[in-house]
Length: 104
Image 1 (cartoon, rainbow, N blue to C red):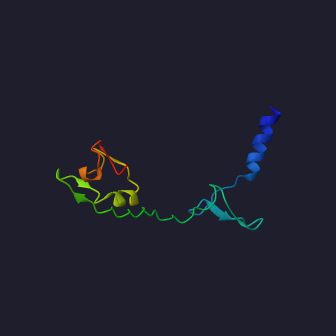
Image 2 (image 1 turned 45 degrees about the horizontal axis):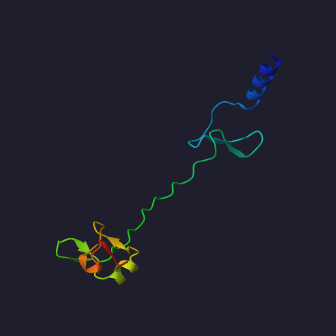
Image 3 (image 1 turned 90 degrees about the vertical axis):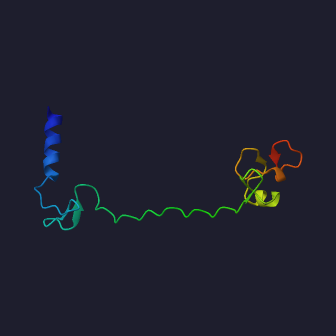
């Protein structure tokens, strides 16, 4: 019972009526200063910048009208080697031994 009464007394010591600005803050005329009751004043929103997409390496078409790297140097430079059959950038001209894995 005593604990509950002390909790109420503490809560009422810090409470006061209204006078809050749009940020939930006000000037304390009695003690000086400026404080907030809903947390700190909101910060200005920071703009969200979308990452700039990296340009794709130009690829050339092969006999199947799919897109493939011009050569293995281009595939390695793009970090795509080895290139497997069915992967974007694969072309038969990159697969010397015909095992389905180019630029190995």
